[in-house]
Length: 397
Image 1 (cartoon, rainbow, N blue to C red):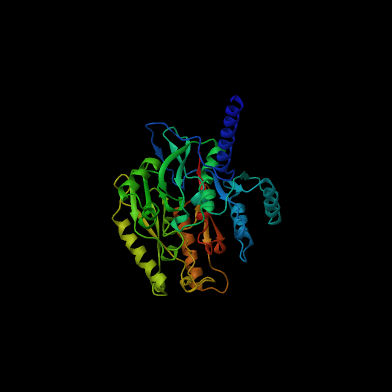
Image 2 (tube, one colour):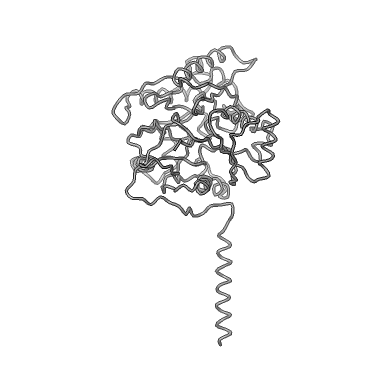
């Protein structure tokens, strides 16, 4: 009888171990162990134009680097451009990959020492969206918001979503930073902050990601986890972004400083190029009227500067016949520089070149003291993003 009892206990233990093993996946971080449970507490979301200590990127894996138009050369250009101004924290798959990347950088002529590597499993290049969104608490300590991720509401294999949705958590764990719990599904490219308590989002994104929540519930949760006092709801993003993110804010409206908004504009001569340009024109003008009637957290109106969409390019489609998302507002700003998307090259219209020079001048005026560095990022555009989408800023302590 005693032997049977012991055997029963051992069998139960084995079953428990088997069931536990089935739920464990070394590539998926299931249970964050360091949530911020301080109550009550307030947070604030620094503006991207403020002092930074690092920019995070995710090295391109798989098809991003093996496609006919690989994106890793753009990553190298960005790393080289950022080197004098800010540390780059580069997420890689393993230690072996670090040596390969270092060799690529040396071959390109880069011998800097401002790149630091972090081994974190990832499948995409979109550090802005699945990487950590950093906020500060009332004592100026950095924390990471635990936003959910569902592949932009487009559907995907659960294994892909599992891997991508754990990246910010693993980074927080590596940095020993607490996570701020939230039920919101949200991406970094869908939020813009003026650093003083006002954020901009689009209805087309926020409502799509969180169909079970009301507009008021979404707004209140953003206020709680980001410390926002004012939420400006724009309607829709670019029509060419509908099938990708459904309208990320970072393609159309950016804060250059706490009081200045850069807003995209389809130029009149491009308006009737095709249905895409027509829809984008109408959406941007609707958003312009919203911003004209909006105020910041202190009730003050904004200075709004229109930034043209790259002219003549609404007539150029990709291999699938679609209009790629090309926008000058998908830039990255850091301590001493602005990385600006560029599109003109010999063979394209002089109108594009003239407009691009004008955009560069505007950037120089609204970002005084920063160097404007042009980066040709069209290979990334073909994947549905830009410079801002593949970089995520980490505010200074």
